[in-house]
Image 1 (cartoon, rainbow, N blue to C red):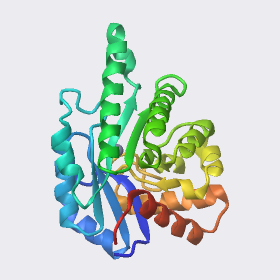
Image 2: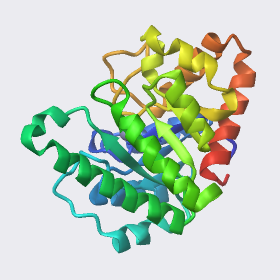
Image 3: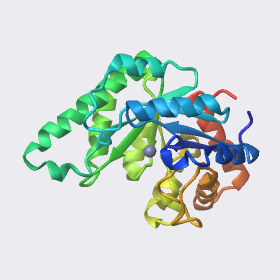
Length: 270
Ligand SMILES: [Zn+2]
């Protein structure tokens, strides 16, 4: 399948799409739009696999989000079974989320420790299965979660070299943090937030076009001009356009390069 647009991070296996998913994916196909539907725990990852098996313009990832399902114990072997599926294109989303860390008060260190162990286990599994990582990072103060992720990834890089790779999804960090991800061989992806929040313009401008993606994170984070509606991968087009506008580049050149990037980083097959 030839794609005009690839949304590298959505959750179209989510139940909010159950009623009209067939129709949505058909419309995406007509417009040459493809997506990667991202798992956040074992049940969600299994659903993502079922949806990807059904449509040729949908791939999937499996992984355990740092905070979405704190009750699940990470079972490496059951995840491995999903991960080796031919349409599984990454391990994730995984990483560190310190946004609600204050709620842990006395147990803050234990929660940080739990998240870091879970992240490190998933890094090792991704490398063992030769898959890229789909990273989730959400800082609380300053760039704290990103800094800890970069420290962990930096150590893993020394051990695994080129085998360690991937993308930092829904990037909300600084130019310096983006550069550090790029130096470790990770791309960063921008969501619909860049269509309405000016604070990301500098980082979009500075990161090389070859080292970034556009994503919707559907059904969340709807871009302008569709704010207030349910987000879908069809709206990724607006994020492509915003990247072209911020970087002052030709729309078509940006579109072609972003499609190439998605194929390169996630090894997407047509
Ligand atoms: Zn997501």
